[in-house]
Image: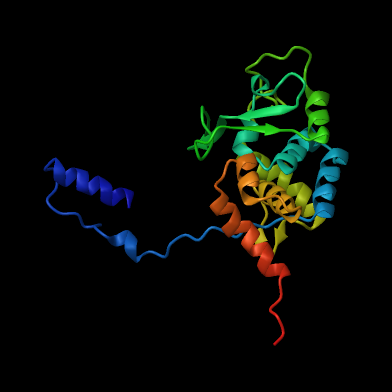
Length: 235
């Protein structure tokens, strides 16, 4: 599709006469994103505990325990978590302003002053999450300091975290694959959304918490939960 667009530009500027790729992308099978895969509360807590207690030689995976908790407890996107700065959290750790992220582009980490969907939102923390943020908050941190830096005090690479610490920990628990699908840190978001939906929170409320649309929450999560739990009436 992109190459075809380049050819159309070249035709417009009289550099070529025809577009040999015109419409070719329509013959390709569309990419279908995997369905949301959520952990149970017990599985979630096992993962967190495994990060907290990891002692394998040469490993620094315990360093990522606060990040794992944050991902599970907020349902934010990993790129939002690794890009979060202390200036975006109230002093008491009670509220978080999600309005920026760090993404990987061609192997480089880039800060973007926006979220994936461009939706800026405030998130009110539970007491457990508030305690977590207070426990890791440095004394008088710089406002632009990262909340979850790497062990070398740099921005965490979402890819490296997923391919190393996350993969090793989940493989050790036998949770690296569920329903035939490879599990990634993004499934922490699926878990949070699913668990909140199971508690009866509306799609509108959950959407505001996680920066999505209520339509997406309904179609991807709540409708699926209904189909898994409801049974046809016997006639």
